Amino acid sequence: MQPYNTIIDTVKIQLDFTTQEQQHDVHSKIIDYISKSYFVNYKDFTNEISRQTNRVFFIYYHGTYIASITTGIYTTYYRHNRPKNNYYISIKLAGLMRYNQAIDNASSDCLFRLCAFINSNNLVFKITQLDIAIDIYAKFNNVLVVCTKRTPNTQYYSLSEQQKFEQTRYVENIAYDRLHKVSKHAYTYDKAYKEKLDYDLTRFELSLSPKFFHKNNADINEIAKALDRYHVMYFPTIKEKLNKMTEYESFTNFRVRDVKKIGFEAYRIYPDLVYIDEFLYWMFNIELWHFDIEDVETVL
Image (cartoon, rainbow, N blue to C red; front, top):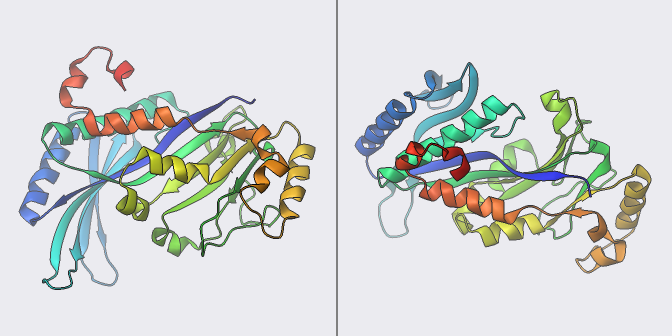
C-alpha cells in the first residue's frame, strides 16, 4: 500500500455571546493575546447590500497569512418569543498542512494558542468547519474516490464525467453558491501541483460545514460515519483503476453490498480516526499552561 497521512487542514471555530459588549471585550482580549506571538493586521469590508462595514483581522507568520478573525451578528427566531440577536466571533485557520514546515508549525501553534486562551478563560467555542484530508504519496491519476453511501437528494459526478479543472475532481456536483447549504462535500486534487512539490502527493479532502456540526457537534462517531461514505483508493496501475471504474459504472443502481462484488476494499485507504479524535480532544482541552512545557510540540 502506498504511504499516506491523515491531516486536519482547515478549522473554523465560533464563540457566541448574548451582548455586543461581551463580544467586543473578548474579541479585544483575543487580538491582544495573539498579537504577542504573531503579526496581526486588519482590513475593512463593506457589504454591498447593507452598506455595513465589517473589520476582519488577519494573522500572519513572516508575511504569510495563516488565520482570520471576524465578528458578526445573527438572529434566532422562536415560535412564541421575540427574535433574539446573537453576537459571535469566528476564527478560521486554513492550510494547516502546506508542506512548508515553518508555516505548518506556526499555523498549528496559532490554532492551539487560540484554543488554549479560550479554554483558560472559561469561554465556550464550537466547531463550524473542519476539513479532513488524506494525503497519499502517489500521482493524482492513480487515486480514485467513490461515494459508496450516497446522500439522498444530492447530485454526484459520474467517474468518467469531464470536470472544470484537470488537477481537481469533485465527488458531489454542487454549485459553489450552494455549498453552505450542505453538511459536507468531498474532492480530490493534485497537492504536489498546488504546492509546487518535487514529489507526488494527492489529497482527498472532506469538508464538514456548519450544517454538519449544528446537528452532530464534534462527535467523532458521526465524523467517522461521514468519512465512511467515501472509498478513497490507490491503484498501482491506471489499467486497474479504469477496469474498476468501468465495473462501477456498469451498475444502474449501485448498493453498498456491491462494494464487495467490485473489490474496492483491496485498494481502499482508511483515515486515522485516532489522530482526528486526539486533535479534537486537544482543541477543547488545551490550556495556556501547556505552553510552559519545554516540549509542548510533543503534547500537540
